[in-house]
Length: 200
Image (cartoon, rainbow, N blue to C red; front, side):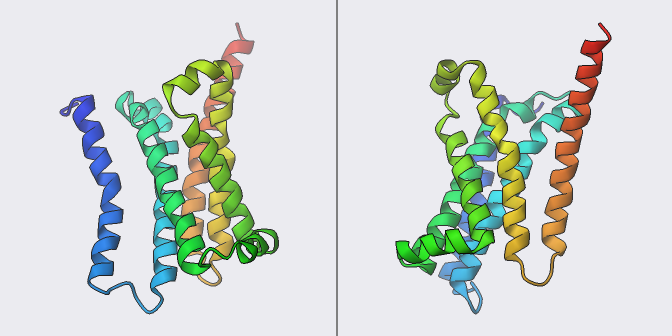
């Protein structure tokens, strides 16, 4: 690898901030379209889902390539996933609902795409809060079990996106296909591991 791990993380850190900087540039130029609030909410949600898929891609990439650096970036990518999911939620609560908690609660209860989005955010919150080494030491083996919540979080996020889109489903289907591939690779790996253990 050309870059050291420290520099690689710095580069990835800056790259993960690039979407936020790009949105700010669009806002300053007044280029957020006819519905700026919807654009902002959608933009943050898109990046949360993209980074979530990149986080899930780290392990398959290591298995297929033999490189170890993708796994060392997993925590950073996961935290940026939550960062953009948080911005997505804040944009909805502040810009769209103006802190109208009654309307937000009504949305959560009555609108399935809001319900699935909130569930995904809650799972990502649990993962972000316990991503540090102190939590890893305190939880022991349960830490790994807890962090498998990334799988239902990713499924809920993909469903949230698909339910939100009213007409053109091409983009949600692309994300769904990538997620299915990533989860399928894990399933194949687990099956092979189990077979190996059974044949011992």
